[in-house]
Image (cartoon, rainbow, N blue to C red; front, side):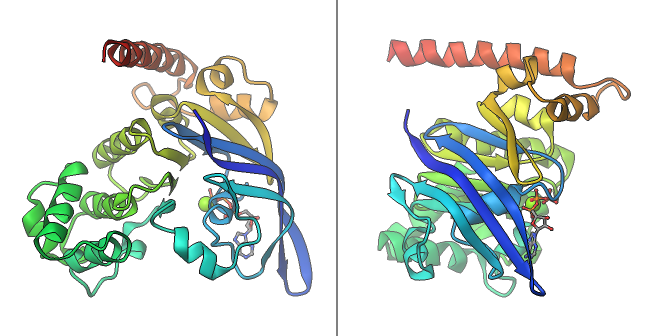
Length: 292
Ligand SMILES: Nc1ncnc2c1ncn2[C@@H]1O[C@H](COP(=O)(O)OP(=O)(O)OP(=O)(O)O)[C@@H](O)[C@H]1O
Ligand SMILES: [Mg+2]
């Protein structure tokens, strides 16, 4: 496996009203191709800053003061907006919390997907239409022909997020950044969308998944980092971090996560169960791979 995203000792400062504050303080993080890496931590810890830095979308008031970001082997730390534009969609793309902000409300889904595909793949006519339908099928969209003709407000939240994932995935980028991709969705829809994200990870894409939900991490991610006040406190495989947290903060996060099926219980036993299941699944996949 190789790292599609490597962040080394990243320090980011934000300047507002003459004052500067450091929001990232020496972040190290890497995402391997074909795997899901979770970034967890409480609100304001710097999770979105990390994803924004990795897509060249830091706020204007932010400045990288130290460190390095490598994307698919290229040093992108001080890239211009023009340079970033050449890789967004093709090398890196993003799925955000609220699919409505990612879609244009006054344009049909067809034209929004077509834009991305035309720009990056040069497809047109029937071939373009076929590719759009196959993308929507890939994200398990029901009735894709109909969806192409609809506007975002005519779709449910889960359908919109599938469209956003289809667009993010249209050009098979090497890295997909998902920043709280399911927080705005119903619980049942959340599960399906998360499964989809996991599938992306197993198809060779690297996925960085930002979430505050440790249950999701246990189910979905291969490795994880814990961030707090701009510092990475802990990182490793999900199994290692859950079974053997090194930091009090991580222990607190783990024990503060409620069990959904039995209120009042903590996540720890669930995590163990899930990890066992995940490991069995991974072994099964390895065996299948070996038989090919
Ligand atoms: N546009 C901005 N201007 C100034 N400060 C900002 C801006 N965006 C974020 N910050 C600050 O940067 C720090 C990190 O914020 P960030 O959005 O990365 O947190 P987060 O971990 O994503 O939180 P959440 O879970 O709430 O999304 C916070 O202290 C926040 O107040
Ligand atoms: Mg955030």
